Image (cartoon, rainbow, N blue to C red; front, side, top):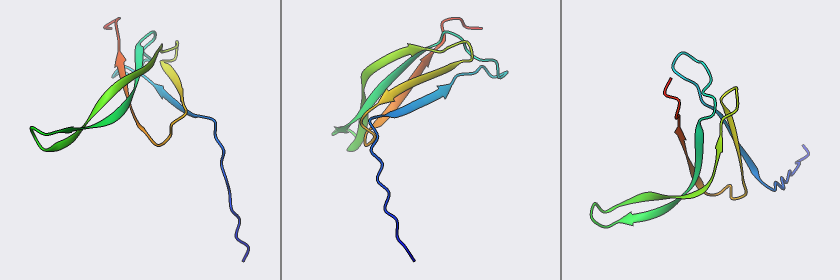
Length: 87
């Protein structure tokens, strides 16, 4: 049996998503914010929490889609969505 080793050299990772209303219609022009999460120990409750640091933002297209490129695939990220149209 032959063992094959694969190496993947990626410059970045793509985070893609789609924002839709409850009736499945796309949310056009929504503000999408990408934050990188950093661990933060809360001594008051003796737990580890996470603090978000702003990285970038974008708007959804006509199909409600958004896309971000990241380079640090070992970190955790949070995406926040704001719809100003309030359909």
